[in-house]
Image 1 (spheres, helix red, strand yellow):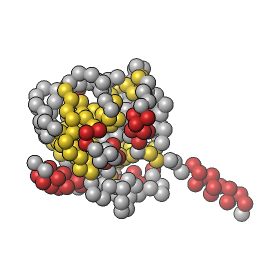
Image 2 (cartoon, rainbow, N blue to C red; image 1 turned 180 degrees about the horizontal axis):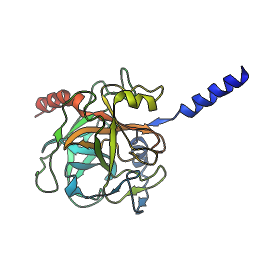
Image 3 (cartoon, rainbow, N blue to C red; image 1 turned 135 degrees about the horizontal axis):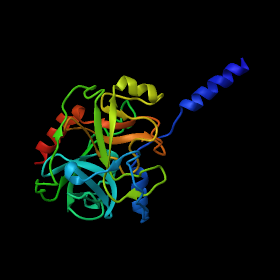
Length: 273
């Protein structure tokens, strides 16, 4: 009996893993006035490659105190979508976005934020970090040309894109202890069915509002990628929400599923036009 109890304890310990919302550490660091080191290593999101904004013109850097904290995606000339945990301050003037640049710290164009609308049920109800989505209205419209363009929003069923290879992008850490890369990174990964994703996240609720992406150990989103886009078949399928602490890539990265929230997004934008 003692041996069986020990075996059960080891299995539980092996399956347990800390979860994290990857923006939190960066936001707290910016609030303290810390400076993140720059990672110039040849590189990855975690396991990705260098890319350019011309290939991902919908991508923006969300910044606080002029420092990158999260990603986001251009919905139209006036609105950006990101994760709610990226914008936990109720002061829009604390934030700005940079669009049209492969670098988060220079180039392109910047816009201050006029209005932030986080989902009213963010982090309440069933699921792990449910309803982790927010819309930001910019103080002035973007000119949608060349390296700055909107992306089509996904509208389908909870298991839409399952089995497809999709692409994630961002300026997040390239490993759990690395600094932020200077240039945009991309990574192709496979979308899991939510039932498959649940097998990796024992004890954590995967719900219809989640979409999971996985490629095996050493690949995935990390600190600084929060709110950034997952693109499937040219559509915005998700924004980065949460994953395993330390960015090991051993479990799926979990995104907020855009298709589930499109009607909410349409309502918010129409109500604040």
